[in-house]
Length: 155
Image 1 (spheres, one colour):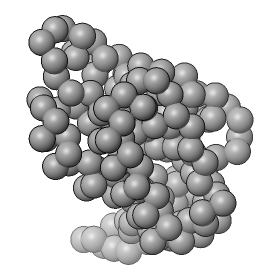
Image 2 (tube, helix red, strand yellow):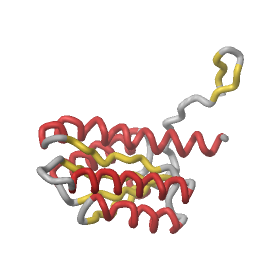
Image 3 (cartoon, rainbow, N blue to C red):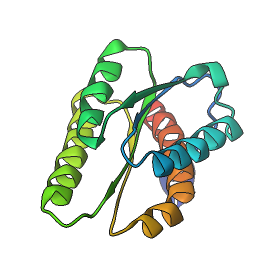
Image 4 (cartoon, rainbow, N blue to C red):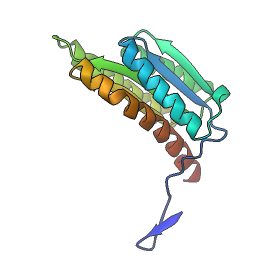
């Protein structure tokens, strides 16, 4: 722990050695999702998560992500999980439904399981925005899960 104004503070720790990470990726808007996945896996490897410790499950769409996250969380095999998907606004209310329900589901699984989950389900207005954000959001998801696992271990 470092100090800020003489108060103890846990510093971000991005060492991924030994961590087991589960990833659930939607196949809907597959180009964006594969971009998220590639960036996430590259970043996990960069932070010393072993390739054999990264497990990927794919699902049809964003609404199916929380159920598989829940199953993975209950398995006891993973230190952290990542949700990857892309919800791109269409002409109907369906966008809001999928965005809200998938987000709520991911959060509920995380809180119920006490396992860190990085929610990298993009919600964008169009394909351009999704493609522009996929690499950064994929990298961020990897760093978030590593940092959160290490923080929770120290608390």
